[in-house]
Length: 179
Image (cartoon, rainbow, N blue to C red; front, side, top):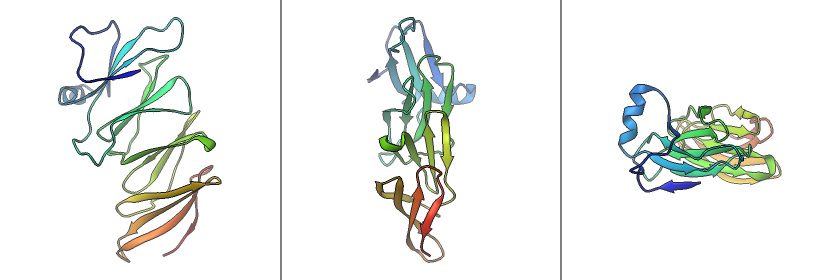
């Protein structure tokens, strides 16, 4: 797998644009993430994945991540997150958070976490594992992950301060909060 600086002059035989929606595909030309993917499967052909850019802001991530499912990759382009099945690239999932503000792998729990403005979305080997309840009015921060628990803070509009929370990584449920 290789992130390309620009789209190759000669496209490979297989080229997939994410998302597939025609009106969003036109947006791809304005700085998409271009990834040359060479699947591990012996009969799979290499392909170019073009992922539409969400936002041109250094505060949102861009890059590629491993996922709990070995044949999938996670590509994030300016906070728009795509989970692509490299064995069948026509199958993909676009995470509903726009933008994703942070991507965090939790190897012990076999999860990939997507942090948004208000909540956290977890992806596991079988796809979506859970989505937390609202954790913040504007801005979720992860402080620590240990023993199957995620310790974080979220800004509470009523108190105008950061409020701590503790999230169970198996279920996505808040097990402790103050406020």
